[in-house]
Every structure is written in C-alpha cells, then in structure tokens.
Length: 239
Image (tube, rainbow, N blue to C red; front, side, top):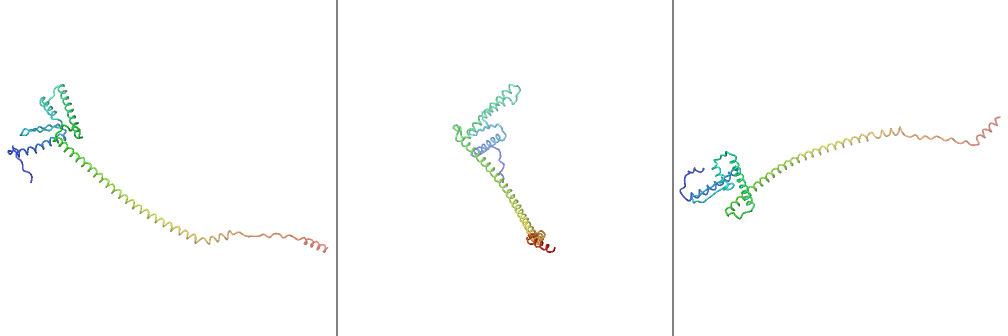
C-alpha cells in the first residue's frame, strides 16, 4: 500500500516536529543542490529552525547571492540607461570572479589542500562527496571494461567462425587436390602401359630397316710372275 496523504499543518509534538524538520531540511538542500547543478542556476537557500538555528546553502557563495538579490530587488530588474547597464555588467563580472574563486577553493579542497579552515562536519561532507565520486568513477570504469569484454567476445566469436570456414575450405581443397593427383597418376600409368605394349614391334622394324649392311669387297689378288712367262712360252710354242 502507498503512503497516505500528509495533511500540511503545524506538527504539535515537538519531537516529531524536530524530526520532520531535520528530514525535510536535508531533502530541501539536496534539491537545491541538484537544481543548481542540473540547470546551471545560482541558488541560495536560508533556513532558520524554530530554535533559531541557521541552515543555508549557496551554489556559489551566499554573499554573492544576497548581493545579486538586493540589486535585482532595488532596480526592479529593469535597465533604462547605459550607466545602469555598465554597473550591471560590472556586478556580473564581480559575481563571476567570486564564483570562480569559490570553485577554485572547492577544487583545492577536493584535492586535499586548504583544509585547515574546515570544521569536522565540513570535512565529513567533503569525504562523502569524494566517496560518491569514487563510486561513480568505479562504476563507470567497470561499465567500460564490461563493454570492452563483450566487444572482444563478439570479435572472438566472429574470428572463430571465420577460422572454421577457412578450415572447411582447406579440407575441400585438399580432397580435390588428392582426387586430381589420383587421376594424373592413373592417366600416366595408362600411357606407360600403351607405350610398353607397342614398343617391341616398332623397335624390330626400325632395326630391320636401318640395319647396317656388312658388305666386304674382295681385294684383287696379285698375279704371279710365272703366269706371263707361261703365256709367252705358250705363244712361242704355237708359232
């Protein structure tokens, strides 16, 4: 069940009134701070408790906010002449300088410098702000690391799939290469068989056709000296 609607009226019980004041004061200051940060507004908050205790908040400095408030209330937020415009610009410059000085002091305090003038409560608030900042920084760092891990995992999955595809293509190429090699070996064996089958007849014919002829011419026999003499003798006898 949701919370019931609270009647806005004075709380009679002093204890309950003090507790409510403490809770709502903190919430009011928190909202004022958020408004100044989110909307870049200059915010000043002044609260007096029923016991007369002062609580305040200023986005820059309370003095700057009060001076600006007095100026606007006194001038009625109207500028009619150049002198008023110059005066207004000068006040704006002074206010900006004061804000810059306040931010510089705040920055030095956040870095651990110029802490001598701060009270224990101020130091506690500063420590809480630093812890919140560290938590935000840590959360942002974890988020960045998580995003990077997810991205690397996606890239790893893509590379794994590409590797599987390349391995499959390599296997197919090896199978095709082995099949082509087998065909080449078979074709070469068939050619060798054909050449071996026709080689003897061809060789025989070639050898028969081009076989060298070992012809030997007989040398003339020398005639003996007795033959002419015998022929001469025969001739002589005939005569």
